[in-house]
Amino acid sequence: MARVDMKGEGMPPNPVGKPSDDSHTRGSFVERRLTFQLSPIAPFSLEFTVWGLRRRPQNQVDRWDGTTYQRVISIRGRPAEVRVRELGSREAPRLEVNVIGDRVHAGAEGEVRALLSPLLGLEVDLKPFYRMASREPKLRELAERYRGLKPGRFPTVFETLANAFACQQFTIAAGLQLLNQLVRRGSVGLNTQAGMVFGFPEPSDLLRVSPRAFRSLGFSGQKTKAFRELSRKLVAEPLALDTLINRKNEDAMNLLLELRGVGRWTAEYVLLRGLGRLDVFPGDDVGARNRLAKWLHRSEPMDYASVQRTVDRWQPYAGFIYFHMLMESLTATGKLRVG
Image (tube, rainbow, N blue to C red):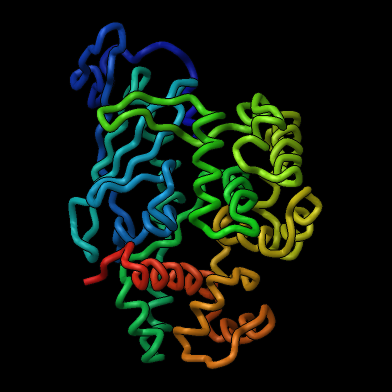
């Protein structure tokens, strides 16, 4: 799961906003709560942004109940739940964050902020995108329909690759069901009022899931090998994928393609959803390019090359169009209500 690793075990004597002031005991479990606020760069819509992470209602890691985003993270090696709800408006956004767990304290705030910022795209300034969209009526209509959407990123490249592996050659819904089972099998659960919830496993967690268990969950032999080989690599070299952050797209693609189970779609997916490269539209994504063709009223199906030619005029925001195509898909199937 996404980790918030704290240095030192001692509690500050009089921490600011003491979580213990909002603590209560359930048996031997002491639940502590840390509350603070965030101010994303406007415009911002928590609902649209969370659906960009969730993709489908089946997602049990990135949860949304209609008003509050919820996700399990790790603090001092123990699961805690982050809950985010919107207080302001799209043009004057303000978020309330609650972190709940038995090892939560005021010192965790900075780390949780650092986790949520890329996860929810809080500091991504899209004003240049909206200016570009204002010059093209069709794009302007799309941008206004989902105004406030931010391009959220998975917390780690590992989690991004795991999502990609699970969804390869499957629908998103089927891939997320597979991933849910793996998360429940490989991660530590947290008992909440809503029931048992789980964060995303670490590479070391997945190494404890045997190949037979992977297969029993529904993963193919090739996907099982991809998961286990990646997990072994990251346990041996925890920072092995961190170099991708500072590499240009082509170099990062080449490094990703060296990993087992990674092809062009997966590599581009990681660039966009794991590294925040908004100029990358994963053109091998059949659902996204079909939705793009429908939105553009194309009578002929699009291939990778035609997608790249089409989105080139929207650079450096081709990847953000990809997020909008996801919103269009969610709206068309009734999973997301707009307006």
